[in-house]
Amino acid sequence: MLPNLAQTRHGLPDHIAIHRLDARTTNTDWWTATCSRHGGAPIDVCDRRADEWEVAELARTHNSQFHRDPAPDQLTDAEISRAQALSLSKAQEQILSWIEEGKVTEYADGFSAFDISPDRADVSRKITRDKITRLWAARWIDATTDTGTSRDLQLTSKGRDLYRLWRRALRQEEVQPASRDQRFGLRPADLAAYPLLSEQRWFDGEPRMVAVTCACGAGTRAPVNEPPPPCTHHGTHVGTGLVINGSLIQPDQYGRCSGCGFDYTALFNAPGPAGAAAMCATCTTTRTKPAPRPAHSRAPADQATAPTPGAAGPHRATQHHPTSTPIKESTMRSEPVFDGEHIDDIDQDPMTLDFIDSDTLLGHIKAAVTKQAGQTDDTPGGDDQEDGAASGNEPSTPSAGTHEDQDTEAEAQAEAVPQPWVFIVPCSASKQPTPDGQPIAARDLYTGSYHRAAMRAVEAVTATGDTVLVCSAKHGLVTTDTPLLDYDVKAGDPGTITRATMAEQAQQLIPAGAQVVVLGGKAFVQLVRLVAPGALAVTAGTTGIGDQLARYADIVESGDIEQYLTGQDADGIHATPAAA
Image 1: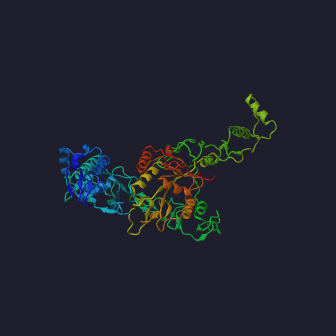
Image 2: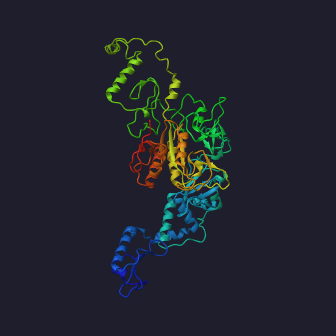
Image 3: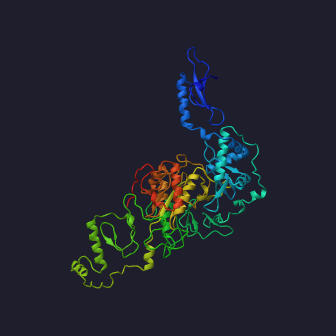
């Protein structure tokens, strides 16, 4: 290229250069422009053009789009001196880049960076412990944990400022990576102060948990140096088997379930009455379900006290319905429950009740008052007696046996439990490797930053009795305790889970009457609604992944997920209501 004075002639900044190429014809000169503000060699701003002024206009547009205000980025002499004193190595710079993107996690087997290749999926790399502990001792990075079995690494405010200063200095070619790691003047004892999970050491106040395998084969967590907790995986799938009362049983055959009639499904012959027919996983789980306790708290698992009857938990002010205004849930068996056609004193799910007009509602209330007074609509003088009670006359004494079907107070409290919730989160392309062939729990397998952010939001609002499911491209719907091996299957690849299989899993894993809540983007929400119509979306109204991650962070901080629940997709499309 033959440079000329075109750059000055068009008033372009120093990092934008206009060049005249060798003449390609006898009558035409060819022009192009380059920019040197992108690191490394200058890049072409446009392809070759015959018009110098057109090239200058394209260069001006490029500068306005990518370098609108270059002055603040220009380093001062003090900043240059500070950046040169950092003297980071190429390896340290790369590790800091991965940590800034949330890709580095510590497990019991060491530190790993996940999904680090820009053009290949599931590329991971182990990181030497000294490189991490040195940055931690220099207060460039910190570690956070939710489970006690793994830690996510992130930049501290000091590390973020210094790393960005280093990147600016590199871009302006004021510094070059050092050949050896920056040691920050630290001693070996400073590095040893980091409590490594591989040595079963923890920070003060950190949950001291380790990943273990339950007696039934499902993955779980337990305090260090203690045996696995009692099995709580009744109805959980482990491989092809099913956990029933602490024991793993395998399917006896495939065919039609004798309980629900569902065909082409795995049938299990669980311990029970002699001659009991084999049933599907859902029916087997229900038939062998342990007896419930008298009371079932809706408070989060970390709260010991049960909520006041009629009061919602801290993260659920009301029950939601995708297409109508919620009804306050009845908490006493003596309160009438309306279904639009008749009234009874049994507990029903208020989310399945239809809405009725005010005149019909008043008629049902009148019938309820009459019934609770021990009378029926066809009792002679029923209306007159009601009017008499209003004028001060004593109502008649209810006849014996009117409330023979009433349960005890303890049974009423047990039946007044709000409907369970099922949270469904997406899997991630990045996973913890399992080279030894030993499966690990799904909660520990997926390491993607989006998946972990969604899981943190779910864990902040999950209450006792709720279910958390991960939707995997290969395995479909699985519980977080399900042991899985590392795999490389993306949606649409051979081996992807089929819709029919996912529908069967949804029938087995989602309890009847449960409210399904989906955390994910528009396409993921629509996928889940193919097998769980009426599922509520947390991300409706968001404009991208960044907005969704901010919403998850707000849920973690506030403990309130209901403010975001809606029956719409991220673009405002309504979900299909579930059939009653």
